[in-house]
Length: 167
Image (tube, rainbow, N blue to C red; front, side, top):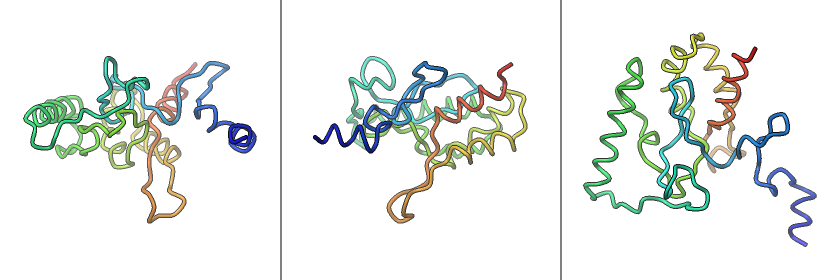
């Protein structure tokens, strides 16, 4: 009965919040994807097993804050992000170097998205203001401000960026 009601009242959510583009499933608005090219907005690192953002292996790294391996991984991620984003502020947003508990987050904060704008603008030869607008349009506000924070859906921004340069 619960499944029937979910399908009736919330069909998109009950079916995985899939993002469909011309009858092709491009992903889920709930699960991150491994965007690595300079022209794309990048999400949080994934700590899932075997491949990044593997929904069958959801879980964090389980490394304690005092673990030297975690320090090493974060230091390497910060160095890589600074090298890939030389125009950005040297203070890298923490969520871009730390994985979530599930390792599957498909959203980041507007601040983490904005931090990447100079790189994306340069890679796509687009004005910064145009990318800022796309990020603002893909930002979801919480229903009640004290319950959550605004988030940006990485996949939706990247699809919008690709659509700008489609013939």
